[in-house]
Image (tube, rainbow, N blue to C red; front, side, top):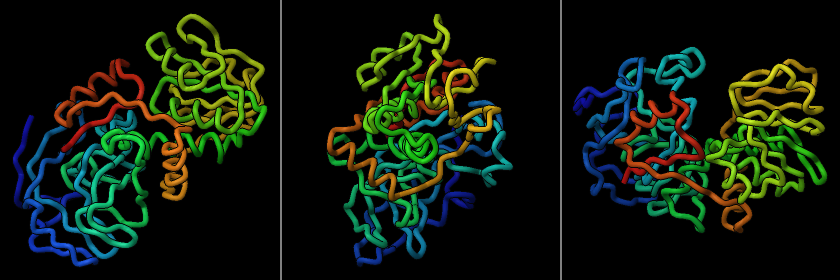
Length: 321
């Protein structure tokens, strides 16, 4: 389903950009009047995702305009598309998808000037142009392609906060990462190893080699073996948990289901550009590797369908440019 909607666009898309200038005085007249954006106009199955032609948004005070190189797919966007998160996120329809952005600043603000390469956690990144508050962005890693950097914000911040803020992993800790083959898990394994932990990771046959290559000390095939006990912390990144989960560790951190235990925490990642900059520094030092499966933006609806059937793995980026 494809809609063409140039006039009267609402939601995350603003009015056409005409003869705008950045706070640094850079001319933006090379920006087209319209762009492609992956949007939903209603809640439903993957067929509600459409590539629309809409006006390029206009940045307000303190905002930058980004020419998007890539965004990425996050499984929670399936719930957003279905309407399961409408009370949590307060989405206004039509809504432009995409929370991860990697791109180049066209109109600058704050510490960012035209030509700067940036990443961040924003709304409306599944489009050729996006706007963001300058204060929520970080400079993109230099060691990896800009399109690959779109994998970092949501998954990387979630893993960082699980490992350091909530699990408080340190040298000598034994941590079980349940769901290590997913986008968050691949970051969590590396960050836990960087913190000095012994990492036990669960992964299916398709992901086991990648998880091991990123530093896991032990890899457990959850399709044939039970989750091992004797862990200091369990970081849960999957929706399903065994009934005996509380016997596996002393403390628990979950980004999905709550775990009934006095030393358990469930959390949703917050936007923290300072932590994002620290993660970028680790990427540029070679401490954290970023591995992606790149797809074109046009494949977003099919990607949602595949995710609902459990056929996606790792971190998937969507190239826009």
